[in-house]
Length: 397
Image (cartoon, rainbow, N blue to C red):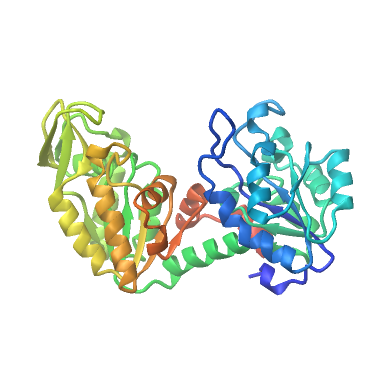
């Protein structure tokens, strides 16, 4: 693996693809700095090594060129504050100003380019656009795992212009190593916890994990498609009817391979999708008509906690219920705490997916688990067994 630890940055301008796609409020203040904070060690490593840094990123999904609300200038003050220096800014990513400011950049200085997606050529993976970006730097560093599953100009195409000078930053290195550890070097028992709203987003993961895991725990809205497939009554709970047969096949395939497949036995059901709705604790396979399951129940929490506590490797993707609502967060909170407790006893735990990461942060457990993935979609595709263009481009010689 080509990493920044194996490279001499002295006198070099490092063009770093970062993932600074952070949420902003209506005053353009950053409401979650996680992605920026995660990239700081890579930036500091290069600066400390005598290099200069040129940062390129996207922000949001601009439709037709520049939009004020998607300008990266809004995050400039925070980056400058964290690095303890005045970060320069180019109001374009490939124009004359970008060329001039990149050319003038001295060792120890940092330049932030304007939003890459102000050009449609970025998402189209345009080679000419990638070459213009490449012209700005001496070495290419990909540290944007969150976009590694996209064959965009700045994440995959650009690497060909740096055949001997393309590297993984710390985020990319840690993400790939952590996921590879879970998939290919996992301690036993290996438990995968999969939740969230829909089976459609997780079915490929389930299938790819079947020959690797010992236990699969299902939760969240997706559990009701499995329960329906097993002949249960789910009331008004979330259902993907077109995936009932697929869910049934996955369940029986797990049994065939000797994988323990756990579906919740009870659920907190409500008469509306509302925190103040009337609730009842009911069997997960006997939800009355007019009610919908919005969280796993105490019996499920107890059995799942025990399974997690006896695991050596844990992969968690997706909440157990609608944890954003206080009355339906007990399941997700309990699972988060169980994963943290198992980690403290020596298990290796990988947390991925936006909602799982949000849950870990909400319950202040980020430092109590082994690794929290910053790239939801990329992590899921990697676990599904798909090749990530952003990883392949750097690994290819």
